[in-house]
Amino acid sequence: MDINKIIEQDFIIDRLTNSILNTISGDSFPTEVSILTKNDLKVITKKKGWNFNWRSEFNNEKTEQYKLTIVNNTSIIQGLLSITIENDHVFMDLLESAPFNIGQNKLYEGVAGNLVAYACKVSFQKGFDGFVAFTAKTRLIKHYEKTLGAFHFKNQRMIIDSRAAKRLVEKYFKTQ
Image 1 (cartoon, rainbow, N blue to C red):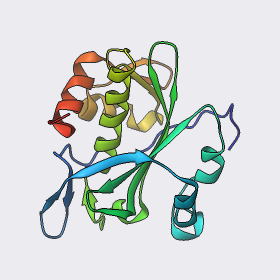
Image 2: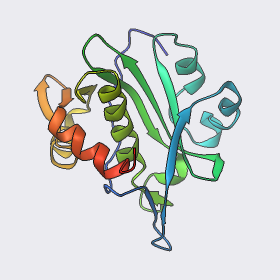
Image 3: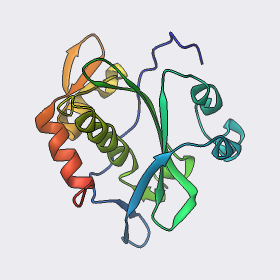
Image 4: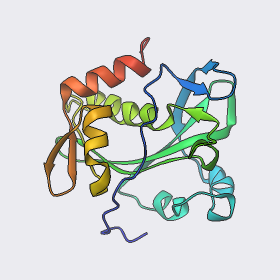
């Protein structure tokens, strides 16, 4: 991936849950976010249905990559997040749900919301008051305003402010 290329985010916030929700059983599963490892890249390929070149993203020294897994089931990656720590906010470079968590027949709901909440959590930890920015596909700007409480800054830039970030972090990370 070209380091200077801006990726327009097109993740869908299907539901804001306390963790992730199995669409078949309705069961809720607690999740954890951890650092993406080189070993993880073996299962995150276009051949396996992933849309982005995560190996290239992994090799970008300016970004940090994280994976979302179910607690006690860390071998199955539910979604991925790449962020850049800026001077006063966190920038979400890339967010992708696992191929089996996209579309009408997805296995789990809440993956994208969980990862956005994690970016907000990192922003609070870095002293940025929860501020997170990202570039949205034009057709999803209203969706992010409604579901995340983000506001449209200019062009396709979206900002999640302290209030919205706090709501997301409290939803997903109650005990932390």
